[in-house]
Image 1 (cartoon, rainbow, N blue to C red):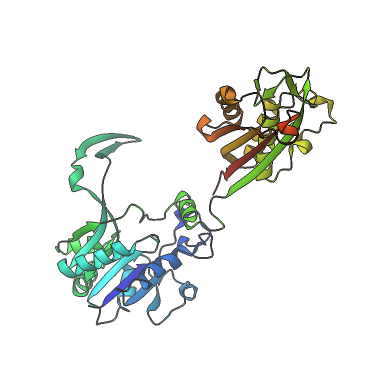
Image 2: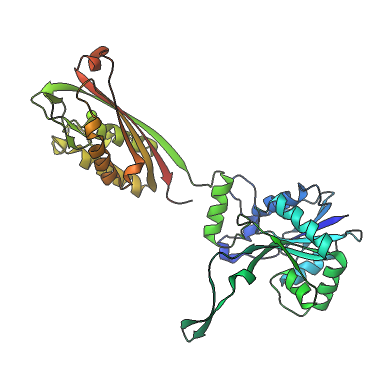
Length: 385
Ligand code: MG
């Protein structure tokens, strides 16, 4: 059995917000949507030949190979189909048709469509509907529901769609003057039953700028949603007559942390982790201790200012993890309050903030109770893809 695949890439795709046709948009790693789609079919052992229909003037954008031909499409989808079908070899038994805008088609779907087309003559990949389906009626600008359709009978058509060569040939010839949105419609109108095979939710049609962003994230290339990690560290000496404030929580203890501000080293380490991840400098640069404005400053507020800076630079805090190293006092009873404070000023859920206490086993200055230290890491994600 010989199988040909036609990839319909004739559309101008303005809805995706691209400068040119969306199928030629770089998805972030140098590959275009069309590259991925063509690759999916060329890498399928069952597919013997591929014909791509591109918009007029774009034929040189796809290098032809022994198994890949390129033709210019027409104004309507079926015009492109006719041009491409003319290049399918006469020996092909099954012709698959696939949208260039569905680059995430799986080998499973391609093979299932080939098998069903061979068995039934015509087959398409389609998705069952999970939502309740309503038919509506418009009156002016308002829209009301007319009735509820039986969900079990509804499917959402995808591609590939596969046909015996003679069936597709007949349907294309019979429907030259009709506008259709897929090839199954032509075959249906010719009165030939079209079999449905299970589609794949991942086999989405890239249509809007949001779809393009999703595709880039999925590809994981340079244009995908960026992720940044940063670390922060701080150490303060313990001194009598000072309050002990950690993550904004006042902890009863015989000594407190010495420093220009409230010496809240948890907030300082987290602030540095955030600024480090965003490459926005450090806490000393943002809040210089030579500035009297920051004397005895509430470090939780400083952290809030830094978090606002991060946000305005286009970053969102994914999570923060903190380790406080202190010989005494026991921090566990205060961890919940510390997490709550940090989560509040960072604008994240408390589950995204972790605080852990650690002793230094009586070793060195921290172990002797002369100082406390804190390590923090923060993960940021880019707001925009
Ligand atoms: Mg500090």
